[in-house]
Length: 232
Image 1: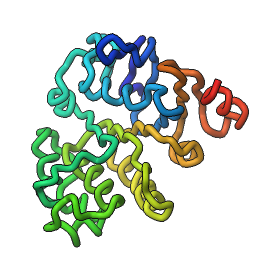
Image 2: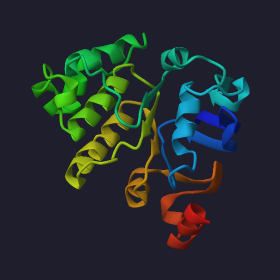
Image 3: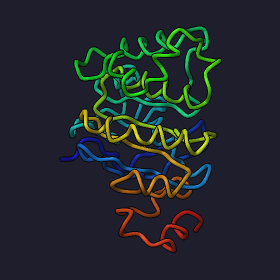
């Protein structure tokens, strides 16, 4: 069943157009990955879905209902949460305070509580009184994911969650995704690492210069197809 979709989505930064008529869909219980070179429009897509960039109302649909013109705070309350590139934790707050702020963003009842996030990422419980800036990059990423989960989202938008992290840390973070999906959350991943994206996703979209250049299931796409869609 289709949960989230974009229809001919366009996005602008001032006079610069970043997205040109993008159509994607996310079904309930699914993980999709968005791949593409730097500047292809991947992060812009997530920002537009999350309400951080204005878009026409009917260009983003949740359960078939237009949400494109809504404010970011309203979109979180509807069940769409963003894990932003760069983590964007509140530096003056400790780990637990950052997580609790995520819970205040939505009144949705659901499985994700402070205790449940600590069970997903045990290191966060150990570091719960630590200021966010002194955490390692991987711990900060876990805290950013945990903060988003605290709103009990139906859709989790993840922007470059592996960026700048060691392979062993990336493996730990990606190992949490099946548990997140098992709790009823569907996932959109923006990912530079094509191999990682193909392992994690049910379906894949490749972006090139603000447009979808390829769509399919990872097992059905050849290396040449992906290379051509990625680089042109």
